[in-house]
Image 1 (tube, rainbow, N blue to C red):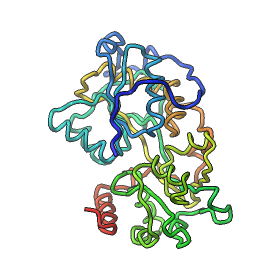
Image 2: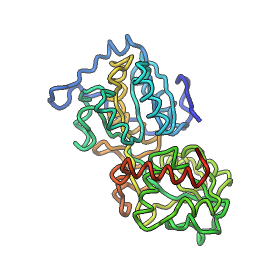
Image 3: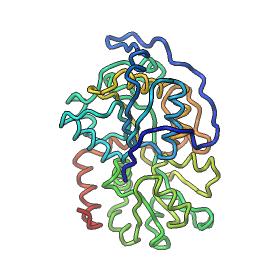
Image 4: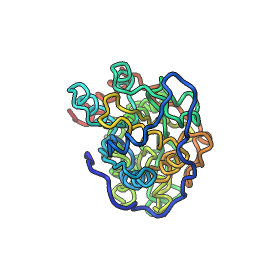
Length: 349
């Protein structure tokens, strides 16, 4: 379900590590060198962010931005990756430009949008602190990574029964007690479905239907279902996992030794942003040391800035076995085939 709202109020999570660095005054020398205009940003007065961050973490994150940038208010619209991209695409085509900054897990439409003029071309001052591969043509910037994993309710699943591999999701002992995000909703789930095929797991849709899989909307819904005991095990994009583990949730987890997929959470300033200066201030703040710490703390994903601290409860990507960039294995043709197969199997039009 869409979660639309104007941000305001106090952070709801407990106090966390404070960020240290202020905005950098200068960045790398490039033709499109950005000069952040704070006065113009404050005159615009707000920034509208389309995002797919963990719901509970959005307001605390935006509160930190407002504290660091008084005079710039925030509005946000949260949707899953697919409907979020579809919404921006539809608005852009209609000339109805409402979004200033978009943050999402991309599919091929983001690449097409880059060619169609969706994105402002500029160089954030903070980009010098990121590896070159996280900057695509001075338009699209990778700020976080998510990984796919298996989780379970530790109060209901004995250690000896805890899943270890992807194939364990299809074990009949979990019939009616296994959950996941529907593949037609999320690019990251489409990517793990492609990975399952690559490691020899065939007919996953049919097998999970036979196992009476239960679908939930978004990672937050999945992990809450596991905590409540609605399901006992689940496939999860790990964005809500670290914050709940920090809060003591009784959740076990594993990144299977056979491997997993990595999804890049990317951001851009809209070329026709209503508040372009505030948009650049916001996205550049997300890339500062302070912004990256807050992104990681409140939104639960590992960040991409050089030297950023690790997540408190989850292993670094470098420590995982056979991590595959999901974007590289999910071609448009394969994406269509996967979505069509899962929709057909579960009778979804």
